[in-house]
Amino acid sequence: MNIRKLIKFLFNTLIIGGAAGLIISFFVKWDSYATYLKPFNAMEILGLLIFFVGLGLTFSVISMTGYFAYLYIHRFGISLFRSFWTTVQIILILFVLFDLVYFPYRGSEGEITIYWLLLGVVLLFAFAWLIAKLKQKETNHSAFIPTLFFLIVITTVEWTPALIAEGSDYIWLMLAPLLICNAYMIIGSHRIANRVDGKSAKDPARKGSESVRKSKTATSKG
Image (cartoon, rainbow, N blue to C red; front, side):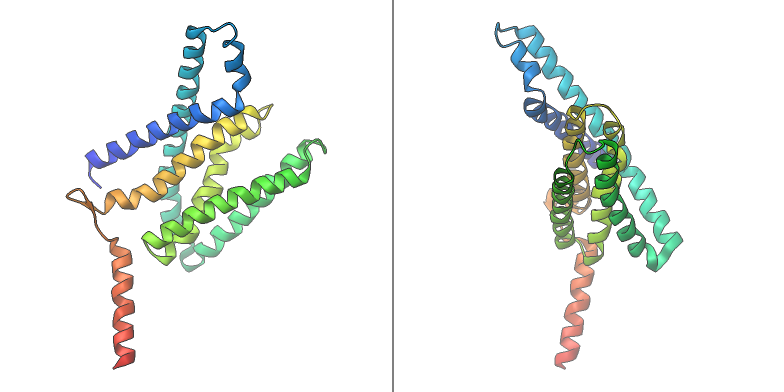
């Protein structure tokens, strides 16, 4: 990936984060918009639109920071734990999913039912699972767990400021841009890196694994 591709990649992430922040604000902060609809106040509504787009842009920058931190953590984990790195990632994923249920439920002192927390964790895991399967399909089998780790563990770390804040509005205002930007980056990174002359080339790792599989098949037939 050259500098031009990297800049375009990061710019697209910014645009996606800003759009996600704006769209989720219509659902989470609709009452703020409704205040200036009757009577209609164009300047105040424009100010709200700019504010929520800016909020989404801010969260997309946090997402990009987390992505580059993840690349370092992943390489460091491989060098430190070697073949056990996959197991360590699975343990951390399970630990974070447990924390996302246990600590909010304990902190709310029963005000939030555990079923809603479980549903949120299941939806987060399902989203991460789908993106990880897509990443695995487009690259190789070993990409599944790292993608799952990034979308669950790293996203939760990025999301922590909203989790400790009072009120649930900013929890959703922050989560949507983070998840969408993280999903875009983890999927888009290999697509852009493998793009040649405006066309997507086969991922080298996937191509290598396919050639090995074909050679094994030919040997077994022989």
